[in-house]
Length: 195
Image (cartoon, rainbow, N blue to C red; front, side, top):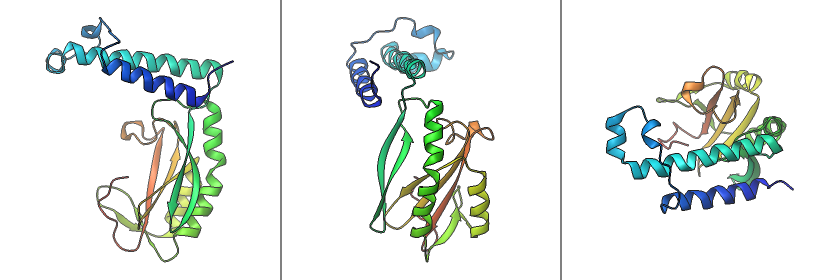
């Protein structure tokens, strides 16, 4: 019987702790980092720990793909005393095809929560300098997105409208194949909090 998502998370956590305690040794670290200056500055011991964990995590990702084990975890998001359960890919796991389908299936309920929560708030496109936008621009982002996510602070709600690879959509280098438009709902200009 294959491991569950939670069991894989626990195994990765144990492996990471073992690597940092020095219980995992990788002897070929010099071949892994092309920059000898950085390699020397970091040190072979630390590089060994990092690469040992990366190698183990890559094996877990392959196990997920081989056994169709989800990388999704669910967590609550609360804003204005309302709570929704949201799916997201665990940072140490990979996304399988079924995960992207589950993310897409949650889009409608996430957008319902967003619509019910933003009454009286102004909308901003997230970026280095937030720019106020109108609901028609947000609607265009919604139509382009394959799935949505939410993050909340006490006074601001962040909507992510994402597409492409769920593990890469937040990385600037993955654009345009993968990406995420971030919209902030706030009473006034958004704070400098990076979510």
